[in-house]
Length: 523
Image 1 (cartoon, rainbow, N blue to C red):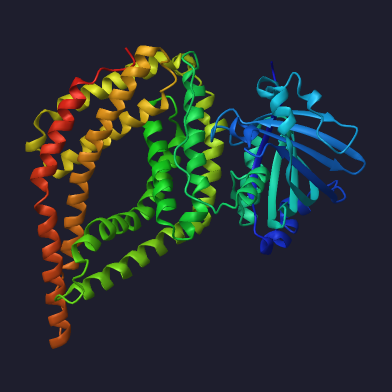
Image 2 (tube, rainbow, N blue to C red):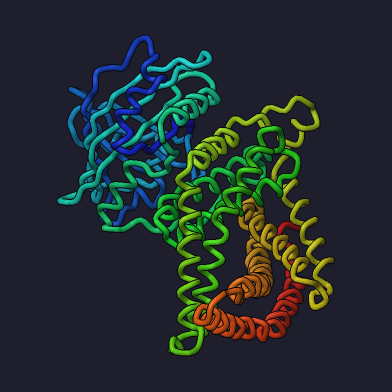
């Protein structure tokens, strides 16, 4: 069945910036002006076990004046529909959900009589909405400002957001409007819907880091569609963790970096297809934000994985207290640097630009026949060829692991990581039982190789960190003594890490041998 599609962008804005938003040149310049504000009350339905949510559906009844509108929404995959959702709407006579109207919608496939009996109201949202009609480049766009609360029992939380919905025309214009608005007001792309806020209240859950979500790409999907699906999921992971990263949450920062790495890997995996003038800017900015977050992650791993175990119960030994105090200070500065980058207008613009580039970038409309053929090629063919090429490269470079310097080992680790990401991206693309069986063994072998090479890379990074800590260029008696003690303590850490090299390198060689034996799942 073909479902109506909702094309919209959700943007977060602080309550403090709301007045700035309504006075922005974009909204003040609208000739017809805003519609009169309307009060919207939406009741969301599900079972106690949240069966609808687990299957990717939301069911709500919204009261709009004297009308009651039932809406069923479905996201095609976790994290893969930043702005495009299936949506079915019907007017309902009363204020309650009418499940008979779920026929000929996506929800019908799971709506058994047993399930229908368990569906009930779980939470509601109450917002005051102001709508601005916008005409841009021949496209009609609706900008809505929602301010209110989501309520679940005695619990509530505020809502303050902007929605841009494409009513008619080109999605490119939607992003132009979003970027213009972002230049005038500090807004940011959001992936958290009102329904997700409600479920958080119902579950009493605090925000937590969001990892990579499964991606489903059919074998016959075009390379363009496959790349867009993957890139949306990566961007979703980045955006979903941005608030935690700003608040100094180590796992949130880690998952943000994973999302960035996965997106950069996806661009690499698809070769020339997603490249163009806009891609150069996107790649440069992805490298920038990755560099801003890197030091915080390195220091966090170093302190937790090396310093804390090595100094446990030894705080009275020479230099230990000075060393740990210095490291915590550096870690705090690094997280402050990461927070500043994530709060910057540069990062907010980058996220919007990535979303626009994924959906309607210059690469999606190539001029020559060769580029169009690459874009339309079935992904199963391209994915198999690319993964085979990368596998051969790792096999060739890994033959002499013990003889390679840290820089070359690092390059093999990056290749292994990209191939692992590809194996995850294209998991569903090769659906046969043999492929599924082989993929599990292949990814397990690849993961072991990546982890051991990652361990070797960590040792190299930790050595650089301890070299900086061992700086004893201090003047004056006590300061010089403290510096020497700190250098002594740092030297002991370095010695512990160096002692691990031989053992970890042997683990890497065994992991490489296992990888060589693993059968490719795409053949």
